[in-house]
Length: 599
Image 1 (cartoon, helix red, strand yellow):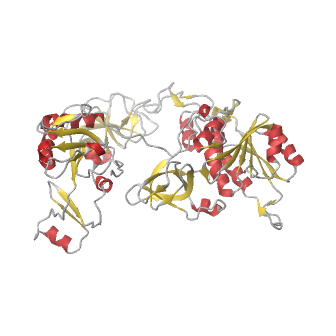
Image 2 (cartoon, one colour):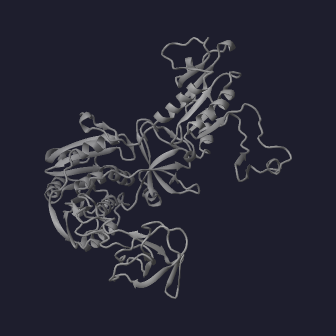
Image 3 (tube, rainbow, N blue to C red):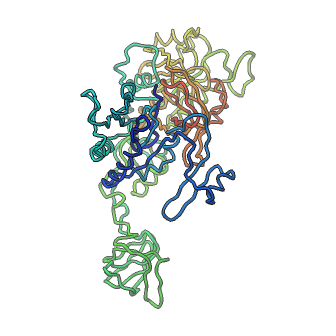
């Protein structure tokens, strides 16, 4: 029976498997130098079936390890070795061992042993040994290196076990053709046309359906530079100037004409401050003192930093290495005049505002802000600041939705709390449809809800009520009221926020004119075991941070009740577990969606 294996490296791993006595080690000892001669950098992992020791009794490293050091690293100017005491009941884990390899320094890892893993392998076989084949119950055998007497089906790749050169050919070709498997994201893009009328949708299907109904706003307005934060460009922003406008120095130092060989000393003929220039052309053997950002004189093409030069009585001696063109920023090397500085559909923030200012632009064309109308329903909901009525709760969802919409640059219309009456709800929805591009409510969309919203929506618009295979946030309503988009979000506070992030946020970004509306996902190491249910996408509130190993690590906030707003306050991301996964073990990689600046 095979055990699953997932290559954790960005380089190929190839196994060599056989029964004991077939000659795996002998072959590898011949194969390794052959592959080295062909330019392949190799790492080798060998599975030993006994208590081995690579250190010598009496040596300091051996005695220190035996004295109790769990890890012992011994190094010289030609090699270093790390010996680790890691006693365990079963076989060592190949994935853990592979992570110890410096993958940036090798092209392929050859593995001897571990024949039970679903690892790409070459099987070694000698007919004279009378051993059964491994390939008959292992689909990961790529080729069989065997003797002439071995009988094989014609469809199997056959290699001569005694021809090391041909086996090396196979390994080289495998290395060159190997491609790292594509990353499988927990939410994938799907074609909404293939969904049909199913009301039980995946997150990907629901999002595709929603986005197929979203058309970007077309109204454009000119806005001053100071008012551009969080707006979306309506046309390409073309640079009217070169950036930088003049060839200038990137360092405080000395500018001169590069020559080979460089003279030991240069004659100082002037100084150039930022905002000024040297009026003459610099000749060979001359130099000027120059400040960062100052225009490089005509004729000069290289700058040496001040700390690598000595100036005495008008003579400058240069130290250290010098390369032609060093520390010189050429005119237009950042942005050339006439080049697109910022493309249409870019959402503008501080960096983009600064770039536009550096081009001398003080007004640009942007799309108008989307307008979002928000209301809450239910006699059980009370306005914060008022006395809480018996058996009621304060309205939190409306304020959460408003805040997130404003963070996305939308203008928000607050329609307050609507009483539980069909007439009041119909009047509010009709009014909202005339005021806003998007109407959002929360609650009243679950199967079995007695609220009026379904009846009213059916009369005023075209609405679908979906069950999204996700947790939290299963119920979702989406459609149109008049010409406005409508979102009916779940009633639980956390479910509202998660549903907004997954469905409303991309819709509002696309509506605002953005092209890159996709949520940012980042890989992180889970510091605990996380559980889900197959067929459902799980969104776990998490806390991520940079670990001591230089990688992102994440853990859950604890209890994941969909009414626990405190878990969203304490967390800084959502941990996404795809619908094909039931368990993520501690140490495995997951994808996280940072709250960033939206929450």
